[in-house]
Image (cartoon, rainbow, N blue to C red):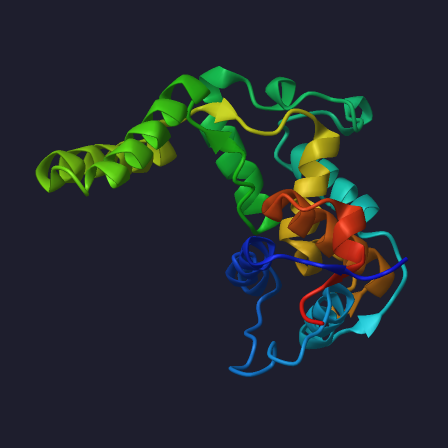
Length: 223
């Protein structure tokens, strides 16, 4: 298939992914490393090169599921015989004691799950207040400042007091864990499955940037 030239906004969306990728995979791009990257495939290859681990084509998603299951069994939160990919997280983490249970699993697994949020009827109005307030800077900066402050403070409170699950099933959680903690859930942490990792990167960047996976696979950053 012919290469697809991305427009400037699509390239900016991919650039916004870079800090998160560096954090998830624990490396930093050099100042000029990205300047010679011509397409998305080269971008993924560079990420895998920066991770700099041996190739081992074992399935990371499967290992993530086993690690989650073992953690749930060890902490006596859920019986492993009853756990399957379709199990709903609300059954693992009932609302009444949800935050404590999730923190227990996070401590056992060794990383954050980040599956709690405030309800949409709170977060969406706060986002709209922030957007409207930003545009209001051109008319009345005092009113705009108050609106932006409310939006930021409200969002900060949501982070601490939200109790809604943003992930529905064990399958969804395993996918999230695999994307965000890829090396940590590998049985052999000195290896990666390079073809699998390229697919995971493509899926994650597609979701984050809003660019379809097929377009990304053939995306060119320059002529």
